[in-house]
Amino acid sequence: MSKRIFVVRHGEYDFKEGLPLSEKGKEQARRAGEELAKLGMTGSTVLTSSAKRTVETAEEITKSIGGVGPFAHSRLYNESITPWVITDFDQFIDDLLRENDQEYIPEGVVIVSHAELLLSLSPSLKSMGQVAFCETVEYMPGTWKQQTLESFSH
Image 1 (cartoon, one colour):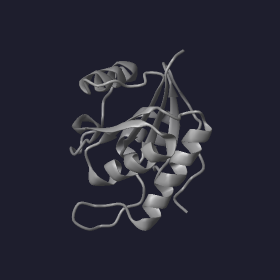
Image 2 (cartoon, rainbow, N blue to C red):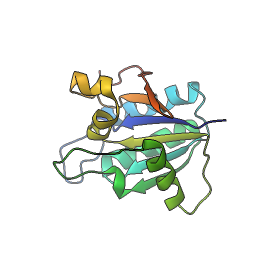
Image 3 (cartoon, rainbow, N blue to C red):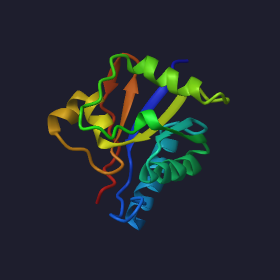
Image 4 (cartoon, rainbow, N blue to C red):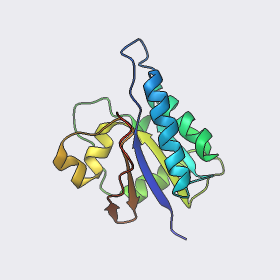
């Protein structure tokens, strides 16, 4: 069975020190997790950037799907103004999973990161130029399947 990978942008956040999720952002994350569970992602490994807003989003999603993690990775947080360049996304994910030195579920991975990662990976999102809070797309090895979940930014 090949792994299913969903990439999720973090929920709406407050512009306070540490940029925590707002109440609306917590609800967006819970709803995204519920939708991922309906899509069969229960028990999946959850990876996240090290930013507070992504960690909080990942925690809500992990609870909703009964997942493993979340595991924070600084490589999922690009603070530079240069665009992300990931030439082999499959290898990038495998490398992140191996870095955990823990058991993980290779069949299902949920990655919580930032708009920049989604824009750099998904041609259709890049053409739109923006990514909603908790926007979610599914990556199928070798291609992007535009399975965008309901927008939770409303």
